[in-house]
Image 1 (cartoon, rainbow over the protein chains, first blue to last red):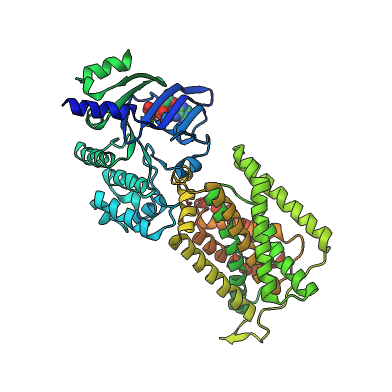
Image 2 (spheres, rainbow over the protein chains, first blue to last red):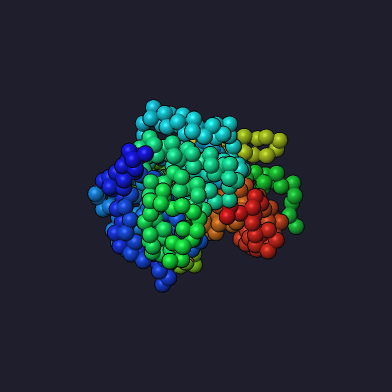
Length: 248
Length: 292
Ligand SMILES: Nc1ncnc2c1ncn2[C@@H]1O[C@H](COP(=O)(O)OP(=O)(O)O)[C@@H](O)[C@H]1O
Ligand SMILES: [Mg+2]
């Protein structure tokens, strides 16, 4: 037991794969993020929780350089370019956006292929594809199907699979459970847990806490564009605790 | 009154010009899909395709096929230049569609005037690619240039379809048109894809110009009418649908040819614009329905 605690503490003090300082973002004159500082350790799974409108999506988008933003984001010590999502993605940071961002009229297979757009190596491409199809066997049966015609859960699996095709070093997920049945959500989160145990650093944004809390090494609570708490998930004993933090 | 026995002959020639409108229409769609921009410099590409080929061939003795290839490559480069110099700066400033149309139309006029200064206002032409008497099929004369136009256009449409559905770059271009932000998140260089779209449509326009020049002529000012016909083809086909644009072009070419027999050559453009108005009123989403 104490060993497990030590391991978890280590994760939070591990060298940061991603460090944001003073990250702010706005839409026109509306400020949606106010000087957020956050650190993700190598191999960590960090949950970012917060109510609707807290700025969770904006935070992930700001990391990718998608929305107008200020502040600094370092990836393995190197400053990331701002306002250039293509460059950020090429460094190995992949966002599975809110709403999934699939190329809906295209086939499952084409979507996966485009996830590996920057990969030239054919053998490695095959290996990644096998791996993704092993993680999400349901996609295997639907390779030729148009992405938009699948169920929500399958689409989310495809979105994550497509992200994995890029061979990410850091995976950002924006509410992957949104609109999905609990069973499917569980299946997807289990897969994320597996990937994390293999060493993939993950930032998981969710509104609904319980499932994310089971996986997370650390939790940030976001409210009105600010990080209001950084927690160890084992300290959160009940939903009430979370609720108190939200509105503190 | 018109002599209706000419109808099959007229339809055949309408088919040829229709293919050319279709290719120009596809050029509109390729850029529109990649960027949401309606590029009215499209006509300049058509004019320059024929004009540069003529200059190389007639004035400098370059063999026709080589002259055509050089012209297509040069016009593709010009397409990239227009994208970099005119479109990109406006796009980055999130200019409206209206501003974009105006800016590309301005580019068209600049190219037109520069061409006038460079080569004068005399019409130029090219020899037909295969100099043989036309084939007679059921009393209808089918010239070899028409076979080149129809065959060449169908080949290009087929190649484009293969490019967009089979190659990674083609799929990436489609991805950009479906969801540009998601494409960027996959590391697809979206701005390079826009440049590529301009190169591709410019090359298409030049190819169309080279095909049609032997049957008509080219001059500094043929671009705008071609651009308008290609634009109508794209509207009729459902804007943003390359295959629809090609069908739209065929339809427009045939209707124009019929209008010429029925009402005289002077009303050719009236027919074309009537088709445009008709579609805008009755079926604004085109034959196949708009892409977006
Ligand atoms: N495109 C936009 N334009 C204007 N305001 C926006 C836009 N997107 C989000 N916002 C605002 O920014 C704030 C944070 O939004 P968001 O990051 O989407 O929150 P969350 O993902 O936590 O639900 C909200 O107040 C929202 O209304
Ligand atoms: Mg959100």
